[in-house]
Image 1 (cartoon, rainbow, N blue to C red):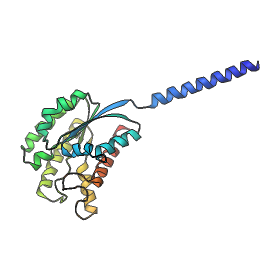
Image 2 (cartoon, rainbow, N blue to C red):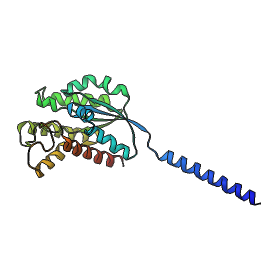
Image 3 (spheres, rainbow, N blue to C red):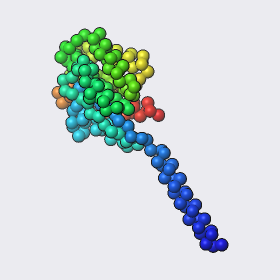
Length: 219
């Protein structure tokens, strides 16, 4: 009788362990392929070990995601360039999610009109909409938020926000986050190295905003 009770106890322990293992296994999020698609802001966010892309990946992994990253930022790219290479650089990797930030060079280098930009964004979205498409605002050109180019950026971001609402996709407003920080802190190169490309503080600000909005969106 004692041997039977011991055997039953052992069996219960084994079954309990198996249940816990299966329960933990089922609670884990599956691996996801996430593309970071953009221009030099995105490229440097990947090339720099402390860049915003790596910080976002680290934050997602802490939240339980197993991420296969697809770095797809190219210096100097306009939205037109991104439309040309989205198939090869992004969609060919079958991404589950695409974080898209593009158009700063359209303004900086005076490439095309706002209407042409709108058309390119719509075409990019139509190609990518089978993935989870996350639209991020344009950042800044100089830390003077009243500068003419930054006023032009405001027009482009207004379109992006309306576009995201129309398509019912997540819009992450990095521009407003940066402006709020600059209003609170005076000086040179608060968030950027050269007025455009993010420094360590800028990378952290951007990554925190992306993680906060995206993880709230996924709840």
